[in-house]
Image (cartoon, rainbow, N blue to C red; front, side):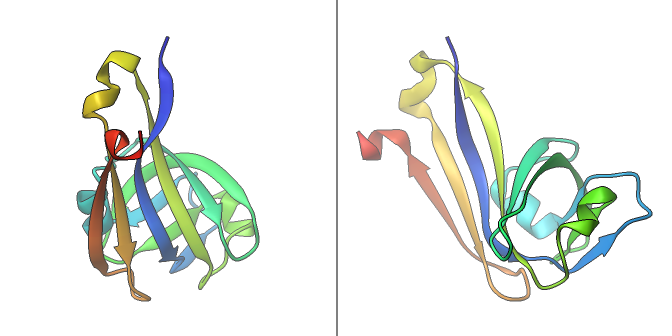
Length: 124
């Protein structure tokens, strides 16, 4: 058995643009990717705090501060929307003791202000 765990989260980032003419994905600034541990082409979940929409897609790296919804999600996310971006991994119960989650906090310009590391054992 494996558990699907949220291993990384970029909390309350601001959408900087949308591009309907791109074939798909989300562009995330390298500053946020590096801080979170999310890697290019990884599948992520994007929750739109502003309007409640949810999207799953893959990541492409961009310039620091960028959050750009590409392709069809550009219809559901607008510049200025607040989003929470999450990456999940399957973890064996044996590895839960060592499991850590990175939560990246950003300011209104998507500059990383804090990275909080949480361990599951802190909640048990």
